[in-house]
Length: 210
Image (cartoon, rainbow, N blue to C red; front, side, top):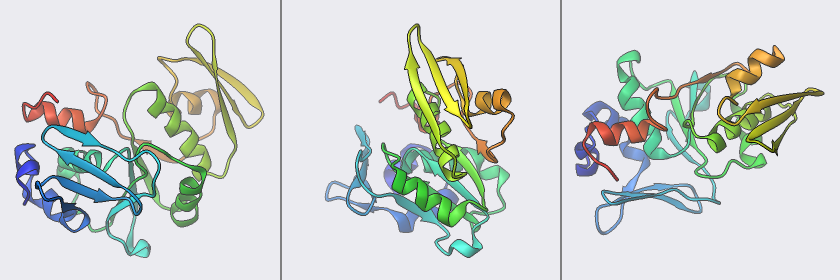
């Protein structure tokens, strides 16, 4: 149990699952290792690495994993599981993955190599850049090329499988592309309804405004 996670209202079962996958600094702040960088969380700040490796948590025996949860940060992974714990018998078959603030082609290729045959859930948030990242990541995991271009008047153009699709920046999403193109990426999108992220929702529920 960690006092910061207690303050956020994270239940003991969720904390137990993630406990092996973080450490603390001298001040007691949470640190999640991305190999060559750290995600850092304290009660007054949250820093996610921009260019680094990735963070994994859950069942690291990939053959036993049935579902891969791809998150925008380690704290988002914790928040997602807190709100979805009631839907899961336990976390044994789950693997959580965060690439931090940068999803490179190398990371996408690694996900495709290891998990293209698994159930994949995107927990990446609701803002425009994150929604576009979800579109590119889904295509990359499927081994498909996709190009995104920003147009005038807040329009977004996507070139996918030889066809151009134009969306408003407000409405562009993986689901919208699936409907227009008729292609199913076999990826589940999990986003909170009234917040940009589950972590924002967790902080709001705990009465924390930062």
